[in-house]
Image 1: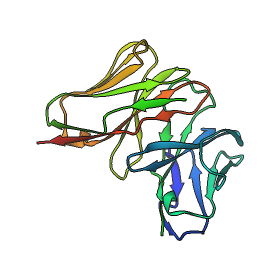
Image 2 (image 1 turned 45 degrees about the horizontal axis):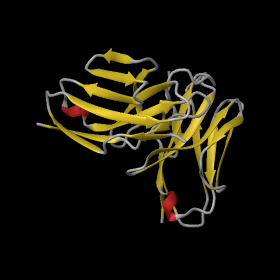
Image 3 (image 1 turned 90 degrees about the horizontal axis):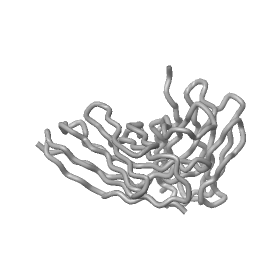
Image 4 (image 1 turned 45 degrees about the vertical axis):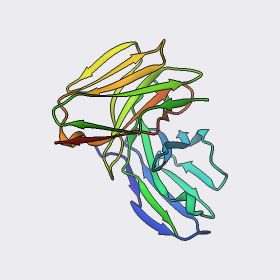
Length: 115
Length: 109
């Protein structure tokens, strides 16, 4: 069974540009979450989607947005990039919308560098 | 709000035992998870404690005390490959998993 797939793995952008990151969850998983990881800050929650609906949103500015498609694939977009947006963006999936248990299945992330 | 505290770095000798502590403050609590992340890799799930006590999985064990809002991850017979970052995370039910900032474990010979 394929794991969580994120594309692209690495990308470099300049300030003011926008970026779209993609995540394909494990087959059959309907819940997708996005996290931002920066050195020393751990994993900061961005969004959670279930069945194409955003269920939760983290404390990030409106420049960060996301969506989920009917096949559970998800994308996140960051507009008007700032230097501080440089980070590893992790996508994680779980089988259902219930939060029993604490297991998320993570992809290897998309490492964004903003110059 | 929710917050988790764990040490930023721990160093231990190969073959030894190391304990990584995690204290949390949360308005609701379902359980505490532990994840391992090697440099450049994805976080991977290690364990989940919903009830008080010790859960053992091979060389790794995890403990939870709900009354103390405290848990720990215990790694025994340390191996060089255990060098990684370890994150605790709180499951509060209706909110997404909240992660600590991580503990970087260095295993030395």
